[in-house]
Length: 257
Image 1: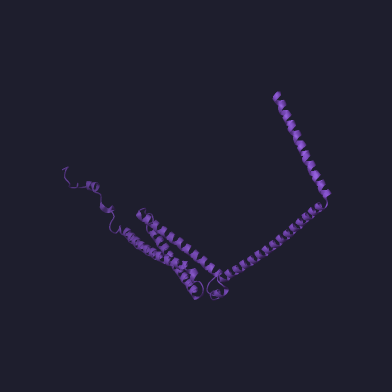
Image 2: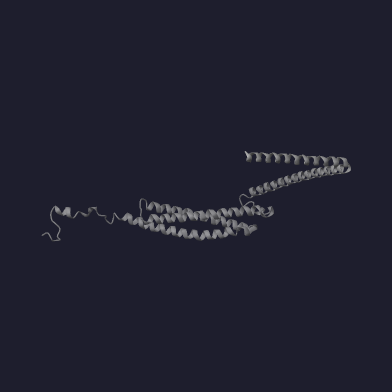
């Protein structure tokens, strides 16, 4: 009967209703379930590490910002050791988070579902924490170098055996002191040159004053100089008049042409 819902018998049964041998069995779906379970475990680890990093980065930043005021003596040494311990702990947490991210990546190898975007977000968070840690470490190193440079040798002596690079910083301070001394010598030479130029200027002023006295003492010379100036002015006036007349004549000739 065509409208019956009973399956056909004989060979046609294999064609209309294929065998279930090709379907996924519970044993075949077990690896996928294991991957999901491992993914969730790794994601929980990543979230926990990110929370720890957030808290410890805030504490490390607070310690670095207050390092300048605590430098010197036992308090400065304790701050330095605490900062080193926190930096080592943060480096270990960052390495652990990177390993967890790599494990998560291997878990979803070849997949293109929402877990890929989740993993990308975890990698972005790791990069942000790494950049923040590097920034804080750089600021702490700059503060330590500045404190070492501006602290007296007597204050820095108890830390010579503990803080690395103090001898180098003291040598740099000596170099800076030598540069300041060289600049002072250069300024002294410049002042000497300026004094010599001032002496030469006074010498030339004296020569001008002597010439003025000579002119005043010899009126004939003064009169001769005055006559020469008048003659020169008269020649200038005559030459100007000739040029003006020639120009006017040329203009009139051009207009009447």
